[in-house]
Image (cartoon, rainbow over the protein chains, first blue to last red):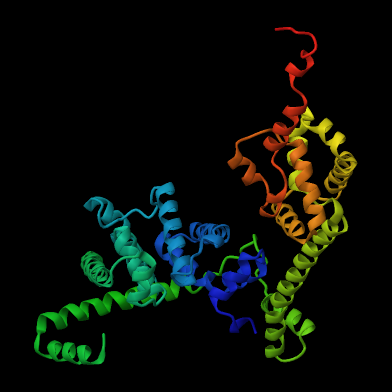
Length: 192
Length: 247
């Protein structure tokens, strides 16, 4: 029966000092918010803290929810802002290795490829390259990649969350994918 | 993309090698990101938020149902019949209140009028007030005592009536209206008494003012100026000195 209620109905109930209704909202969206935070911050502990802060902020601002947008878009917007705050606070632990100087790149990527010859380890290393390549993207490009590929959000949903035009979302995703491709090809060549 | 747009793009990809290569490169990137997500993120457990009770139960549904249906329950309790009946009752209420207000207002006017009629013999309030306000000099009272005893007794009755009316009536606009109505209802005798009393109590004025203060029915009564002229014939100072040869 709980599934029959929409997010907006649950918010209306939660506004009337009903924490259980808000608990249902948390249950529905915490996994996706966690994915967004993990994709943005690339650290599990920071992502968990960001999720917690996101829902606390949402609970405190329930009365300010005007209903103009979806509850999911509203939560994602809070999460993005929370991730940016966390990123600013910790000064971006996910340091971009590709933008660093050539010596540091060799120390990070070339060495592990030589140390782990097995195929599984190579795959793991490749995934780490992808992860770090994503983290090296500017924040406005990264959040779109994470939302599109981590949460399978549509372009329109991303535009609603970030409050930017639909064409901007598409162009930013194109730019992000192009940069990722270049970085991955570069690192692949370095590994090989 | 919509279907026509997608078909057009597919056609373009078959003819454009650059776009085809570009898109193929994106496929590699997207597949890598998807793989990274699957490996890294899928194993992570969703954090348990400890600031709220995450579990939900049917109380949410029940509470919502109670909140949305409480007024319907009240309506059904007081109006078990059809909504038309409830609407007719609600429409009849203001009509009943309006009728009650009209009846109450009418009965209040009748009550005041009855008070005035009960004191019918003394209902000369406007004239009495004129006497009370202007009769401090007792002008002409002695002359009336000489001429008629009825004129002597009437001011006392008027004073008593004034006191009674002041006790029973409160000042207000309706009082003046009731006074006028009651004055019209008095008989000719009481009107003449009132006119004579006014002649006793009022100050001497111009003939126009005198005609304004007196009602049309009292024109047969003598004016004060006439009385003074008559009395001047009886009370001349020169008569006192007739026998003394003061000249």
